[in-house]
Image 1: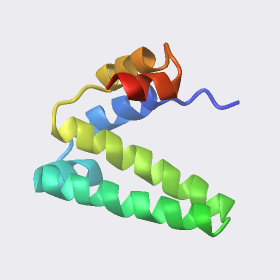
Image 2: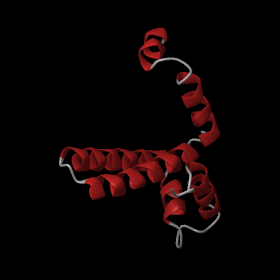
Image 3: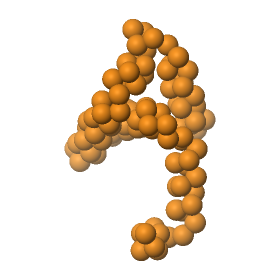
Image 4: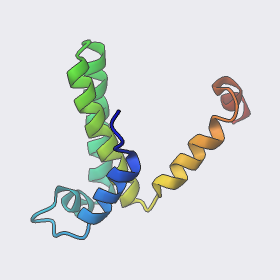
Length: 104
């Protein structure tokens, strides 16, 4: 199994934000602002759904990777830490999903 994690991806994104927009796609997205970052998440989400519905496992894998990358860039653009998202997921998984939803 591959040991690459979302934390690894976040660290790569963090390092690429220190590069200029001329050489870093990540920096370009962040320079364009939250609206552009959010638009890319939406586009990748739709492409992920299309691949899944089509039964395209390779496409689904590739689009899911794009979606995760763009989601982390969006979080970065808004100053939301991945560790805070993971803490929220941890909190939510302490009970069943149905009970968690009912408690909201």
